[in-house]
Image (cartoon, rainbow, N blue to C red; front, side, top):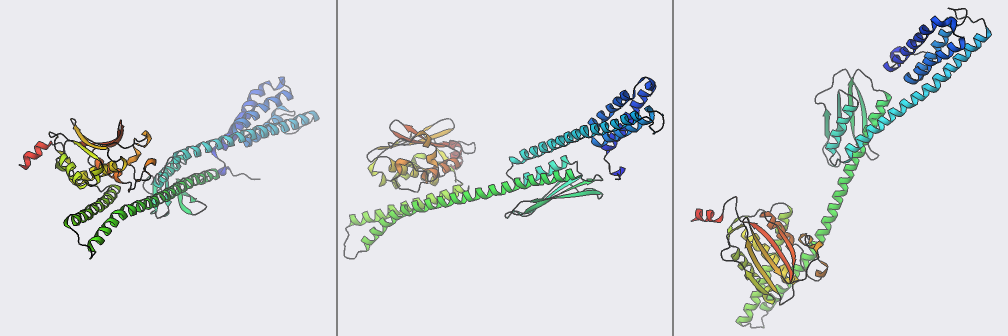
Length: 488
């Protein structure tokens, strides 16, 4: 069997050289004492370099050391000296035993060393792949996964350049990433690994390195890197698909809830308007002025209620699209409250209304229509959930930076864990199952108040529930008196 020196690695050549040096060193040390040492002692001493070389350089170098030691032992220490001829049977036996022991030691120790080297290489490989897995585990974007994978391959293989090309995945555009920027040298050796899952091909990795060819171990490592990248990309794609499915499912659920609520909410005022109009169109009935006005008033109020419902839906769509832009101007808070109460006077007939707004309350920078919507929603909520004959209070107080408004009713208290959730869309309390509505009123209030730069929350008070919200007192750093002076 022939071995090509050019095909041997530098590490192996170094091991063979050390084997020659070790045998030469032992021979030089023992020659001056040849006449004083027995052949068995010399044989044992020649086994020491075999043991050392097998341990440090591996099986091949250990066997070479044993063979050279066998020849040197015969040439320098068995008579006749400086020949390979053996005259005595006992010397021939000792020589053969030495050769056998040297080979056995070389094989046993060399294999143990090779196994240890293999285990250490495997441990390093596992640690590298584990670190790569940790780096990819927390990533949720395919672009970030690709960049991390490319950079780690470039560092691990000491490459001149690494490129990763991804095909179009689930309506995503193809993606290309390269480290470092620019083309690798023309003399580079290029190795390719495919990013492929059981379902489809995701792309490929190309790694270029000058002059040094890729070993089978490096090829396996590159494919292992590609497999880790494939799993991370597939995990991200599947997670996005699952998220989209959940979003669609939630969207369908919300649409169903909205349609169910809206259909009932629209049905009641439409039925009332239809009945009133039918009565007015009845040709056999002569309505007096009072009855006629009552029917027209009912139609007017129910029409306003339909406009209120449509306004809620439009505002919610604007809030969802981040398109709710208040047209802020200086307004008198009491005027907004009075206007709202006048529109709800028929609904408020079953309750006592107390309004405590100080005359010296400053102007507030708000959108008049949107704030009217907030008061309408809060008052409507109080009317629905508080018993007839109870009191609804509206009050306000000022601080250095805020106007705090309170709408309080004497309805049932709310469990602490539900106080924040009542501002979520379609969220209904258990004791409110028989109360009809779209479930959007408080959510719209929250969106409008936050669009004004304030906050809204609910609190349990001794005799009921209070909704509180804050509004900033200044408009872009200007106080209302400055604005008033500019308008005069």
